[in-house]
Amino acid sequence: MRRLWQMRRSPEIWLLVSNLLSRLLGFVVSLLVSRIAGVQALGVYSGLLITAASPTTPLSAVMANNATILSARHHGRVRLRAVLRAQLPVWLLALLCSVLGCAVMLVASGLLNSTLLPWAMVLWVMAGLVVGQLLTHVVVGIFHGSNLSIRASVVSSLTAVIALMSAYPVLRHWGLQGILVQAMLVALVPGLLLGWLGWREATPASPELSDVDLRSESRAQFRRAWPNMVATVVNNGTNWVACIYLAERFHGHAGLGLVAISLQWMALMQLPVSSWGGRVMRALSLGHDVGPTALRQEIGRQWRRCVWVSLVGGAAVLAVAPWVADLYRVDRATLFWMLAINAMATVLAGINVVYERVFFCLGTQGPWLWFSTLAYAIQLLATWLLIPHAIYAVAVGNLMASVVVVVGVTWYLWRRGYVGGRWR
Image 1 (cartoon, rainbow, N blue to C red):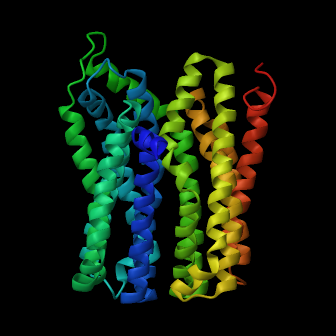
Image 2: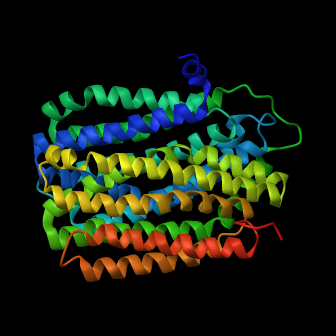
C-alpha cells in the first residue's frame, strides 16, 4: 500500500489512468449506442469519429511531438504562453488541411446523406472534433515537455469521468445527436482548459529567446516532419478505406460495427504504450541530447518496455474475447480471430511507437515515409483482395503493414548502429 501511495506522483501512472478512462468512455458509449440506438447507429457514430480523426491525426501527432521537443528543450527558460504562441501559425495551417481532408472523406463516404442525422449536425460535430483534437494534442504535448504530464492527465481524466457519468442520460434524452455533441466536447474541453492554464503559467522568461526565435524553431520542426506527416496520411487514408469504405461496401453496417468493436479492443491492448507516448518522446529526446550511445540504450529500454506491456494487453483481451462477443451480441469465433490478429499487430505497433519517435530525434523522416508507404500499399492491396471473402481482411491487412514497418526500420537502424551492437 505504501508503494502504491508513493506511485500517486508518477506521470506514467496518471497517463495510464487518463487513457484508461478515455478508452473506457469509448467502450461504454459504443455499447450504449449499440444497445439503445442499434448497430446502424453505432456504424454511423464510429464512422464519423474515424473520419474526423483520419486527416487530423497525422498533423496533430506531429505537432504534439514537436511541441514536446520544443517545450522540453527550453523548459524553465520560457513561458508556456510563448511556446503556445509559437505553435499558432502551424496550428492554423494544420486546421485548414484537416478541414479539407474531412470534407473530401465525408463526401466520399456518404455520411452526409445518412438518414439518422441532419447534414448540419454532421458538419458542426466534425468541425468541433477536428478543432478539439488539434488543440488538445498540441497543448498536451507542451505540458509533457514541461514535465507537467500529471496536470494534463488530471484534466483529461476529469473530462472523461464527467462524460462517463452523463453518457446514458444524454443518449436516452437526445439520442445519437446528443452523444455526438458529447464526443465533440470531450475532444475540445481539455485543450481549452489546459491552454488557459498554460497561458497563465508564471514560468520565468528567458532574455535569450524571443517569440520570433520560438516561431522559427517551431516552423523548422514542422518542415522537417513533413515525411512523417505524409506517412501518417497514407496510413490513416489506408485504414479509412479498409475500415470504413471497404468494410461497409462489402459487409454493410453490421460489418462496420464489427470492425469498430475490434478496433476499440485493439486500442485497449495498446493502451499502456499509447499512454506513455509523450514520456517515450521525452526520454528519447533527452537520450539523443546526451549522445548516440545513450540514444541506442534508450531505444532498447523503451523497445523492451513497449513489447512487454503490449503482450500482456493482448493476452488479457483474448482471455475475455468470448464474453466480449456475447456482450455485443456478435459471433464469438469471428470476433476472437479478429482480436487474435489484432493482438499480434499490437506487439509490432508497440515497437513502431518507439521507432517513429526515434526519427523525430534524428531529424530525418525520409526512411520512415518510404517504409510506411510500402507497408500501407501492401495493407490496402491485401484488404482489397480479401475483404469480399471475409471481414478478417481488415485485421490481416493491418498486421501485414506492421510487419513491413518493423522489419524495414529495424534493418535501417541496425545498419546505423542504433539497434543492436555498438554504435558506429
